[in-house]
Image (tube, rainbow, N blue to C red; front, side):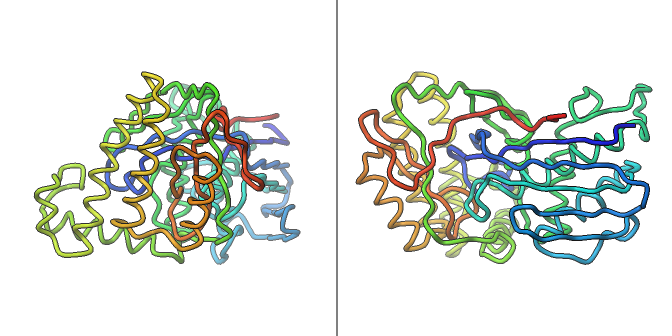
Length: 357
């Protein structure tokens, strides 16, 4: 049994396709090089001792009693709880967490944290749990179903943290590839790599200066409104609705549904633009997505709007809010002759979650 394991999980940028994942729609995210690293060392005591190095905070709990925490501690306890529910026999461990993804910025620091935690803990448990194949699975073993792991990580956020997120962040984190985006169909959970070749263009994110928290923001309310729209239309998801039908819904349900339907179409257009190398058209789609998120989904803020405008003045051919909304970062596609603005972070598609040792 391994006595030590270190795992890295990346943050992600969602190029386009926002608030579509929990509506069985389409999205086009990519993993980034910035992420969260978790180191775990087995110990004989049946306790987890966790340190969030960037915060200078600690937590300690018994393996058989992980409940009762909030914030980053809820992610650690949720990872332990969900892995044990899934049949993993975990040892006691000392866990150290280091992150390079800005929290609350729409770059999915939460998914990076939960994925890195689960991969490191699974590696520590390797040898205690045997799959039907007779082999003990590690995080990079074919016996480990990464879609199931994405579902498990999503349960950590829903049941332990209180954010009703979809699977976009976890799938992008687990299946990311260098120099590629990932077209995800959330009805089938099929992912198709799409080359993200920018030429002289650059993708950057810029912090609006306004923090957001999915569990405390209007994210859960938007999700509930989409469910209400489905119930009124008697459809399984907004993937099955059309613009003429949703126009009959009352406000704001009609607006929420209109965003989802038009955003799915923009994902397909973005894939086609990338495949033919039409970066100006991709910029146009980013702007259209932002307008829809601002006007139909109503998840923008004055700080976000000022940040998007600043990026456009700096030479962006398109810019949009990313993540759950209500603050966080703005993504922009800069023209080849535009300089990266002060404070902006250039992002490139990178490899997905993996063991480091």
